[in-house]
Structures are given as structure tokens and as C-alpha cells.
Image 1 (tube, rainbow, N blue to C red):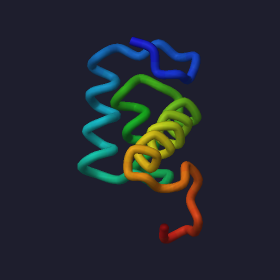
Image 2: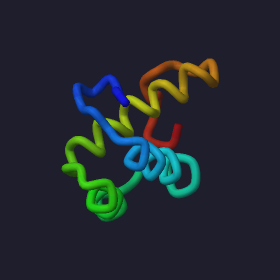
Image 3: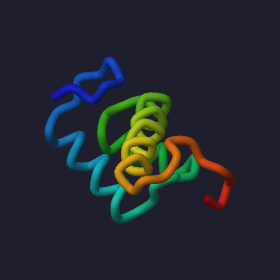
Image 4: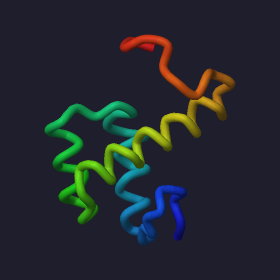
Length: 73
């Protein structure tokens, strides 16, 4: 399944990423990102990019600007 990253993610990887996005954090810190990346078999950079794009998609769906306005936004 395509993710828009130029990556092809398996359904299992997407499930893990979505689960973490919804239940753990929309903005994971470095350690959390490393753990999610390891669980998915992706690089930290790929995982971080997925979260950036997924956040933009979520914000658009919520009627918010695609970019964060502040750190606490």
C-alpha cells in the first residue's frame, strides 16, 4: 500500500504506525520514534516523515492548517 512517501508500506506497518499515531502520540519524541521505527522495520527518518505527513493529513481533516502554529499547537 502506498503512503505518499515514496515508500511502500505493508498493511502491518501501517497498522502499527496508525495505532501509535492514535494511541501514543501524534508527535513522538526521539526515543518513541526509534521504538516505533524498530517495530515497523523502518528507519527513524522514514518514520518521522510518515508522522509529519500523517499529521498534515489529520490537521486538514480537522479543518486546521497543515503546519503547526506553535510547539504546543
